[in-house]
Image (tube, rainbow, N blue to C red; front, side, top):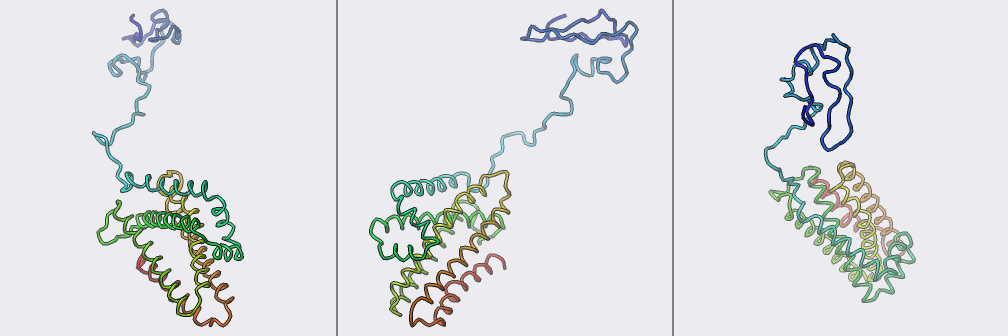
Length: 292
């Protein structure tokens, strides 16, 4: 008998002395076969009875093989595998750079999120270095908001008039987000100039900027999980994000009301009209477009 070969009896009767042990390749250990009494008859279902069925060996993995679905490797095309991660990494690099070189300003932003007095102080003390950091923070918010809208549009199956699921869709969203806030800030500046409320409008613009950036920080891990996590459903993360965005929006309206009511001689009617025109109405239009 050769190594790694199991002798199979061709008769239903297995003699006790027929086979004592087998040699396993690359191992020195011997494995004793079960001993049978003389005259023992193998059952008809035993694979040792008919070696032709197993080609001389017992296949322990029969019925457990993985069957291929394709004859060649298949490319997973989710539309963003080539560019999504570098964009997300770029956002993380900017946040890290700001955390290192603008640590004091970064911490003040987080504190000012809940402290109105600190917000007013930061508006008064703003300088060129802070403006530079503000530009980078605004850029990162626009990018992360566009990434979230991109993933959300894919999750809900939003057809954008022929725009595919690649980089063009992301470019569309970042253009929309940037243009929307640029237009909003321009309108606020004009309103502040018309009603001689430059400082108040500057405070309100900073509140929008502040809440957006805190929201952007929160959305970074959620966006990463939506894109790459196999354990958490993207639908659940999308609903969670929409709730967070709704809470941030309500908080922004609340701070706007507080700032407006604190201005002496400013009509609450004008404040209400502004909130309906530039805050609530665009949101309702967006909801109508997304879910007709």
